Image (cartoon, rainbow, N blue to C red; front, side, top):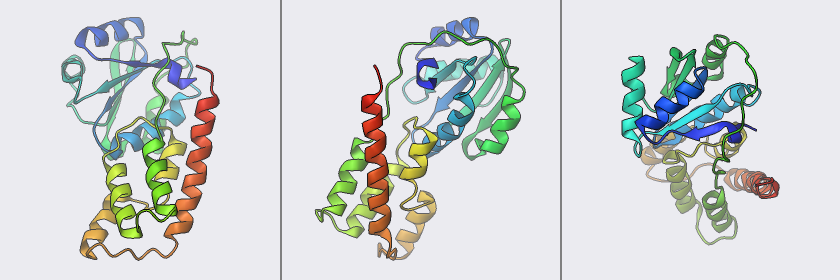
Length: 221
């Protein structure tokens, strides 16, 4: 599984060791907003079948020195989120921010020839859907009204930099769509919700996220 091939690169030494042991690999720099979540969701679709590739993750805010070393080694200007693909220790392809799309990733992965399967790393942390399930439950049970739900949910999603699967990202984004555009419209309309189908969307998202959380709990440790 992909999560078993993900390694956190917390220091410059960890970066050096990772690239020495896995010269053909992928490094993902994670930022602090939903662009990271969506970018990694797209990246995951290509990494899942590539059991020959290890993935190094750098959380830029916490592990800045590691990020700086990657920039120094590759000459690639830092962005977050950012995907850098390495072949034989050299950076051969990179994408930043909203350019981390399926179409662009397909071009990059075509440059990485299929190799032998790699040994799994220690288990990566699983994503936590609890905050979303809690606010959805509060809305659906009448604890908070539509306007409060809209604000809390979109703010949570905008600030979420968790590395989530593409399926999770699609469900989380199914209620309000493009969160940046939605929040702009929200301000322009003085916070008045106009989506008459909001409750139905919230119910479908709640059911789907509950099923995903249950499936995660049933996976072997």
